[in-house]
Length: 537
Ligand SMILES: Cc1cc2nc3c(=O)[nH]c(=O)nc-3n(C[C@H](O)[C@H](O)[C@H](O)COP(=O)(O)OP(=O)(O)OC[C@H]3O[C@@H](n4cnc5c(N)ncnc54)[C@H](O)[C@@H]3O)c2cc1C
Image (cartoon, rainbow, N blue to C red; front, side):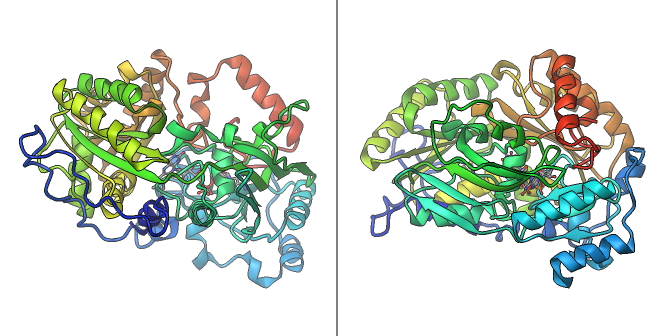
């Protein structure tokens, strides 16, 4: 909650008056009397969003190797000599071998995979990363790079006894250039910390996600994280200007370019963006950062048909165009679940099949107000939207965003979550949710929901069962990937492939592309020590 508050507060220049409680719909309008009085969604406690907090106090998942029947690769086992080498390099404090401390490095945020923890190393600079990688390569010790451990595809924790390379201590901000709009930092900086730092310089990070208080920029780059601002600012392949990475051999690759234009041969940075720690360890990044908006509006709209969702999005694109910064969808079951588990409330008193959250960000409040009003009046008069509310008041903006950002948390509060992050063409976007409900109607399922970044065609399909259920798993996989592939969608819109989707890669990538991926992997990491069992295997 605080994270969102800071984000929203920061878009308002100090001293600027808050256009308080701007509920646009007056008496007599279609919206009046339903949501125009107050926002109801403020009943929640603050969100931890931390992988460690999520991991606390719950049953440990079965070992990945057993649940998924994986065979250990031909890697060396960590010995006393290796441990001594790491201790002499990093000191006692930055080498963790205590089993008590292991769960937060060994179990993922979803509590769906668990490795066989042996050691965690915490380098403080690129030289140390390079020395560790060179040693591990020579000794054939497998390595799992880890940042905030908020990844959702089992990529950030070991499958067996890989050495965990935690990037948390590489957290220096190196340079901030407001004129060029460029930030250079080490890869272990927390996303939210960077955003707050940039806000003070009149800029913001081009990406924003619910895990921002825990995830690190190196993890974001390595997963090519999408999130809530992608509709406006694009993905990290566009926003990462340059980076530094350490190869499996320990060789440091310096591509830390800060220029927006640099057409000098192969754009090697792209190999590391989204390769999920399989090609190198990202140690520094240069990021293109947009200016901080001076005016932000958030509308929360209720409607009862998918056709209305599509018409709303189309209208938002045409009426709001350059100020549209987010378009998210949440279905009825998701909102009910957030209310029941976290006490979060919809700002609308009425209930609907679908809720659409629209955010605008611009530089001139009056101009944006006029556009937002025109959009909402049209949506209303065309009968597309059944109910809605809009605000620019920071606390209300924060509460509405909280409902969306804590969806994953609310759905993991109990039971086991099967989580699919798919892209589908908009005409098919939601169709998979009722299809899955029908398919699982005789199984022991607590709920099936759909929500996501509809503006990017990215749906989060979530199925909750009391515990991990092999029958449900087998009903869903590969069926979900097949359904998605037949509609020319992607089996991973933004979370990556990691461990859990590696064997399904062919549903979204042609054999020729997978073959080239394997060739690149073999060239850059001939001994296959970097994040084995993930992405291409
Ligand atoms: C509540 C919640 C909301 C989320 N919302 C979104 C969302 O909107 N959009 C989205 O895209 N994702 C989302 N995620 C998923 C996750 O937060 C992202 O994938 C994030 O980018 C992972 O960052 P991390 O620092 O936690 O990385 P980790 O989880 O630690 O690692 C992710 C992967 O990157 C590799 N890696 C990590 N650091 C490095 C490095 N320095 N060099 C090389 N490889 C590395 C790891 O080996 C692993 O394969 C969400 C997760 C949660 C829990």
